[in-house]
Image (cartoon, rainbow, N blue to C red; front, side):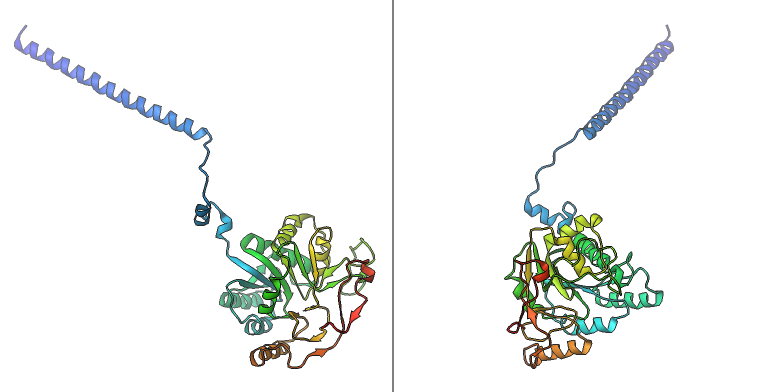
Length: 341
């Protein structure tokens, strides 16, 4: 065999060996990748326990705890309003809602389902300026939607904010907010339904306020009048969770009283809530005064600023009463007391 033949055979052997080695390396890499992929699949399918999160981590990790991402307030004030009453809202902002308090937040509630485009634009501009309007897009502005309106506001509030209490009032009410917050500290902090209660009222069967769907009895059940009442968070949560089964009536305050009627809660009747269909007058003790014009609000704010009192002169228009919880509703509210404001 010549040197050339030997050299050729050696080269052929080396090339064959190199090819075999390269093939082995490729097969080894493919095998390793396949095993790793199989391990990843198995790991993904097996459930894994997550380490416990400390309370400090919960506070800092908003993705893991949505509740902590919600803005918080001690008291949230919901003011039922109408889209066209921007003047009234501005007067409220400049009078009884003029003092800033980080523990208190307020919203004007507006059902915006059937608002004209021009009016809606004005309200949207107002909302952008003040950031205090809660729009209820699925609810129209009319009396028969008030119960739905209030319940929808509770739902939105519950889903978006952390709070301890909510005050629902009308946009013709004047609230002494600092006095109300101070008085709130002396009330039960849970299961609280606080306001001026009415019982024994005959059910309206005709007119604007008629209730054709009412069948329970011939009178309304005890309820806190809608000029202003306070609910604790747990009662709002109950109403929200029960909302699919709740029957709505025209009067939102009547509806709230009915919805809470079976519950073992703290119903607190307070004569300092002047929240009836007509104001009982002007007394410095009043926490909420209903049926106030914008001029009345300006006057009361001026009195508070200048003389430190709600009323320049206290005036009685109607008598008040203490609710008697020990008798049937037909007899609850018959004894008027001239000593009460």
